Length: 87
Image (cartoon, rainbow, N blue to C red; front, side):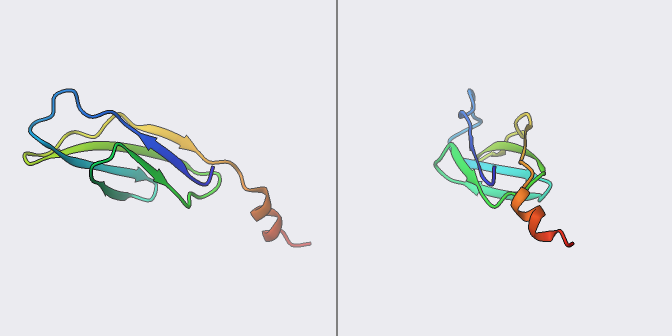
């Protein structure tokens, strides 16, 4: 896929009022702040790449630990491979 939608549940016992979430995805090392939502669509993913995604909650007391990792692997892009091949 060139995009993936990540969905998560709120923490069972937040340490205060929930202010939002933070998503980190590797290998890009991108950290995204998400307010008032429990879903996010990651787009423009590279072909043949494994992404590891983590989510954590934010309250006035700070951030929770990151969630367990979720790993997705994008498909090989045949169209791009054909364009880069030379005869």
